[in-house]
Image 1 (cartoon, helix red, strand yellow):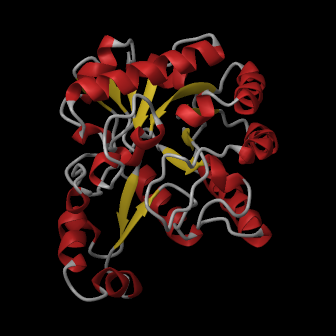
Image 2: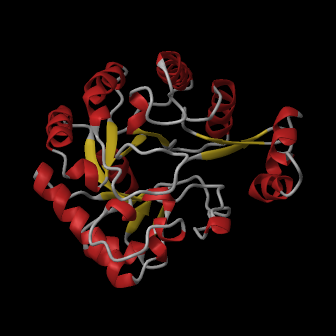
Length: 303
């Protein structure tokens, strides 16, 4: 399945900015959606506050979900999500670091904005920057959410003040009443059994991650076309399927469907490569007998 971080445009090289709320790339979403639909792949759009309050974005996404398989979920970017009480900085960009009452108020405001915009309460959630906190799942349950996908298997954001997902597995699991669907991350290379621990150790060496990857020892591959080379992604898929992983969770950011908004798609050539990546991955998945699934299908299977 594929979750789309459906969010505002901002300069990835600059500090977080409350005024960055542009949504002009939404004009390119229908064409991108048609590409995935042609491959019979539903998309799960996790929208944040600038998207949920943009008339153009609401109109675009409202038409798209008429396919009956794609969905609208929630993504919380606290720096552009009211109420605004916290200082805008890196630490506070992880929602789970905010005071509990403020976390609750922001999540409630966003949930209501999405419900108003699309006429249906969202049931799937991702914390922006994967900034889940110790109370996130409890807050989600009280608002009727059933699925969380805030955990990024194999990644550690603790140096930035965020959560550590090094020990989080790839498989779907229950966390209280919530169905957790981690973003799939696969370690490839002859040292892949060392996993997150070896990856962390190599990161302590000068250019350690690059040396590990170039030597064929270890690469950490998340299932996304953004900064993940195609040949490595294909190997990650083969390993995951070969080891019996039943659900592959892919992701990308919505601004990447139009050049100039993310560092991953800067021009027309990058955009062509972006869709080419997906085409190659879809062909590989089909050859391995892996089928696309909607959110409803995954929930039904889990139950």
